[in-house]
Image 1 (cartoon, rainbow, N blue to C red):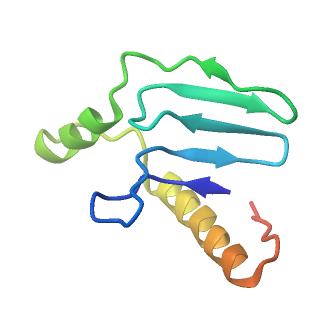
Image 2 (image 1 turned 120 degrees about the vertical axis):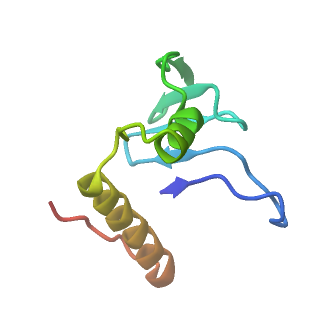
Length: 100
């Protein structure tokens, strides 16, 4: 299960990201500048974030300055496959398995 940030016009805006699996999960704080890891059955602990990488700054640099993106089409297709599986699972109420 995953959650991605919403917008200011949403009825309940949420500006954090979360990925929850069957054995562990990761979640950011509301503004995405802190990351926490929680294994199943345990409390969350801070996780290291590479301070040299600025996700939003990198995104803008790829658009405005032509910087080479760290992600590629293969990565984007994988993200879309996961997003599609999340939507299908929500629609059907069933587990949707991803295939390599």
